[in-house]
Image: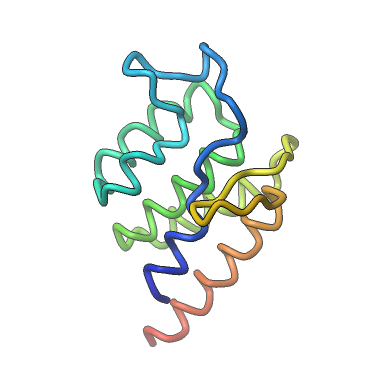
Length: 122
């Protein structure tokens, strides 16, 4: 699957992050800046740490799944996207292309392109 499509699914934010949802540098737990800069391992480290504090945050889980996908950690990507899809939390998220979409729809689409990319690699 093309990285352009993967990048379009990156979640920019779930709205204005609250003070408790930011790290010491003021970054959102969605690690959008690291993802956009191609710093996949930095994004994974930040997202995994934030996941402890926000285990059910769909935006965080979607970006974690995207980062895992970029790192070719496909099983972990599937788990993160599945958890985002099944999260009790549900809200509109802003995507990298500026559009807004329901977090469950984004997670469902991400699982679809993950499945297609795995099939294409066979």
